Length: 69
Image (cartoon, rainbow, N blue to C red):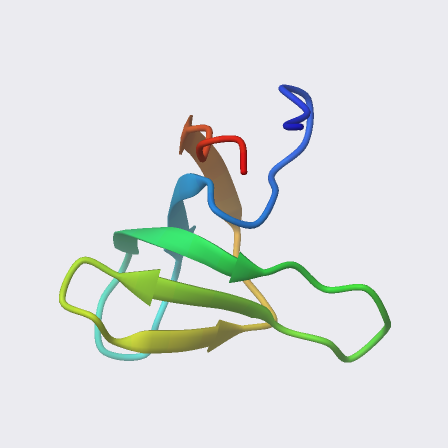
């Protein structure tokens, strides 16, 4: 069961942050894991299949909810 008020595993999100090589970077990805403890990372997979571990970002926007399993 999905929660429309929470970003969960399986959801598609856009993540935005400033980087040293770009003033602003935004990418779309599927959430594979959401942090559950201090120091944990979000685990995301982008449309090119790359795996991202993200600890710090400026925005995360829910694009669509994953399907119920």
